[in-house]
Image (tube, rainbow, N blue to C red; front, side, top):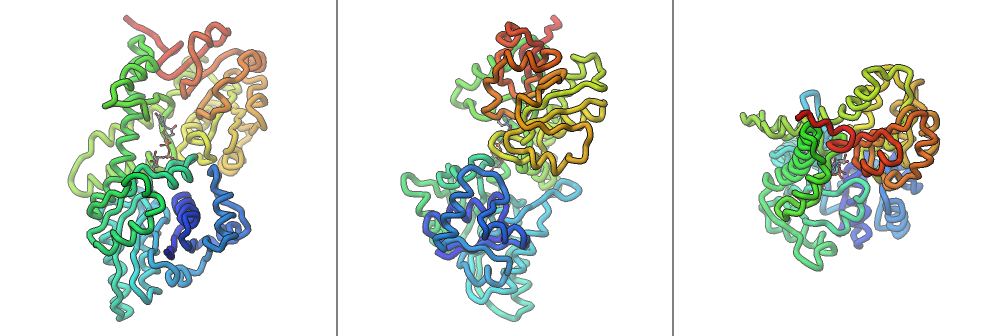
Length: 447
Ligand code: UDX
C-alpha cells in the first residue's frame, strides 16, 4: 500500500521505517529541510536501536522516500498519517497547531479520496476537529472529495521503539467506517499474523485509550514512589514491598519500580494534558493531579538526600552524576530527573561531573554553557575526586560497577542511588554511605 507520514519525529520515523520494511511504499514528509537532507544521506536524527539500519535498507530498496514538499506527500499515499508533535501549550493542554496545519495541507492538495490517520497523541475530539478543518478547506476549494479521519494511537517506547512497532501488543483503530477498518487491517496485516491484535473501536475511545494507558502507567510509578517515601519513614524496604505486591498477578511486576521520578516526552505531558481536558469538560481529575504532584516532588528527592547528608551545604562540592537521559537506551533528556537534580545542585553552589552512554551531546546542547558542569568521557572519569556518586538513570552499564574502583576514585565514599540498582547491605559492607529510594540508609525508623 502507499502511505504518507507527516512528521518525522520518533513516532513518524519509526512507524514509516517499520511499514516500509513490511513491504509498503512510504513517503515521509517533514517541514525541517535539514532533517530530510540528513535522512536522505542516512543520518538519523535520534538514537534508537535498529533504526539506522532499517531506514538505510528500506531507503536503498526504494520503499522509503523523504520529502519536504507537502504536495508530493499528499499525492503519494492513500493513507495519510499525521505524526507531528503536540507540545504542551502554556496551560499544559496539548497544542494542536501542527496537527491542524497538516490537516489543512492534506485538504489543500488532495485530489482523490484519502484516509487520514492520527498517530500523534491528541486530545479526545481531535479527529473531529481534523475532519472539520479539512471540510472547511475543501469547501473553500469548492471541491467535493470523500475522506475519513481515523485514530490509531502509537504505543512504542523509546529505546525499544522498533521492536515495539514490529511486535505491537495491540493495534488500536478508532473508526466507524467499514472501508477504513478494511484498509487499515490490510495495512497492519504483516503485524497481525499470529494472533489478533487489532482492536476496533469508535474514534473518541481510541483517542482516550492512549491517554488512559500512559496515565495508568504513570500512576503506578507515582504510587510506588509514594510507598517508597512512606517506607523510608516507617523503616520498611520498598524493594521487599515491590516483590511482595508484584507477585499478585492483578498487580504484576511491571512499572512498580520506585525511583527518582518519571520523565520523557510522554508521561509528564500526557498526564497534564488529560488533566486539562478533564477540566475543560467540567471534571476535576484529582488522581491525575496527585500523580503529577508526587512525580514533581520525587524528582527533588535525590537532592533532598544529598542536602541532608551534607548538612545542608553542598557549596563547592563535586558530584559524579551517572545517567542523564530520562531512561536507558535513549539520548532523550526531555523532563529527565537528571535535569532537576543538576539544576538544584548548581543553585546550591555544587559542581557536576556527568557521564551518560548516549546523552552527552544532548547535555552539551542544553547545558554546554555552564562552568559548573564537566562532561566526562567515561563513568570512571566522572568519579575522579568527586564527593559522592549519584545514579540517576538505570543504564545497564551502571548496574555492576567495580566498587573498589568507585570507592578509590571518590574523595568520600558516598552513593545516592536514584534507581535502586545496588544492594544496601553490600554497599555498607564495602564501606559506602549508601542511600537508595525507600530503603537502605535513607530508612530512618522513628518509632
Ligand atoms: C511511555 C510508554 O511506556 C509508552 O507506551 C508510550 O507510547 C510513550 O510513553 P517512554 O516515555 O518511552 O514510553 O518510557 P517508559 O519506558 O515508559 O519510561 C518512562 C519513565 O518512567 C522513565 O523515566 C522511567 O525511568 C520511569 N519508570 C518506569 C519508573 O520510574 N519506574 C518504573 O517502574 C518504570
